[in-house]
Length: 422
Image 1 (cartoon, one colour):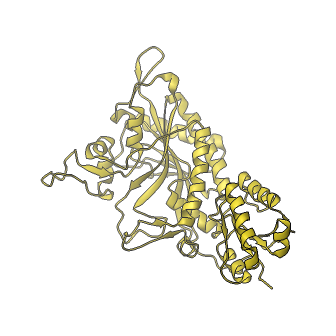
Image 2 (cartoon, helix red, strand yellow):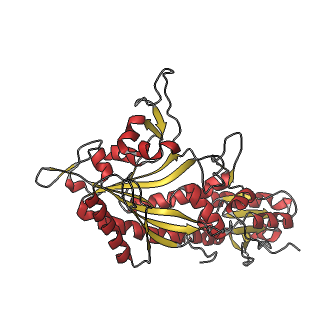
Image 3 (cartoon, one colour):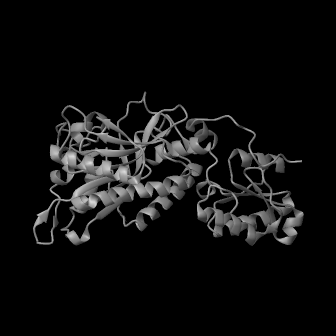
């Protein structure tokens, strides 16, 4: 008699152990520290999340772009990133062996996407009628972290950031910040987690901050008002602001209790001035936009690390790497299993057929991989065109026709529910 289709393992694991056990990512010394290789299972889950977030952004009025992960040194001098992050940036690259180390034409891997998005806004003239202009991208950026501090997915050198920048008038800033907080309030629960805290990160003492004092006071007030209006408790953290503006940081904690920022929204008066961005006002005069930086889920690496620990690898069905495993009882049912799996794939599900080993072994393997649904097809089911669904939590459903089983799983996936039954 096969064991129930649920894991007997109750040990809480960190994301590095889960990432290895579930083949989410691989770290190879030949590639380098802090440069994770996303394996098929991790890529499948990541793709589903990216697709969802991108659609939510589209519905919220964001326009998606692609930008190169490097630019001339002079752009990062203009933005202020070079002065602030030079020690965290990889060395400049030049095709001239005799070029000086500070050659402004040399290319550098970017530590942030915001200068490129400033270029998107500045690519043509803009009118007040267009505002707010919302530019979004899932783009790569790079930080020259020391090899001794990188590890797993939570701290890496190659970062895939869910990033966006809103260019708007001053009187639109409050509404844009509220929109970002509302998006977080929809997207985070769908992914299956809640914030552990909200932090208003303010300017601290000392130099190194861009922009006028009055702009900082105005930006801090706008963010504070947005948090109050959202009704969320928050703490103020002087000294934690970005060098160009204050920010709201949405914090999460890992299994060890370490806190990190997952999502953020920032108000920036400095970058539009440094890049001389402008739009035409109603009366024909030029005006400077405000730049609102925001990330709903942060980097895909840090997000996946958090989701692995929150769910202990048992992801909601909608972004589980394999949503439906199909196991024939015997070789005579292999054809029926392949046929059902093919129908599942055409229905938009991520399905696989499990053929090797005994049925009990295949059930255990599906449980170990945290697959939400296992469809078992024996001789009786093959003859009647039915499957017996076993759920990850141990429940078993009576045999049902192929179409009914696919409709059940597809319905749960489409609803992005954390439950396995509608």
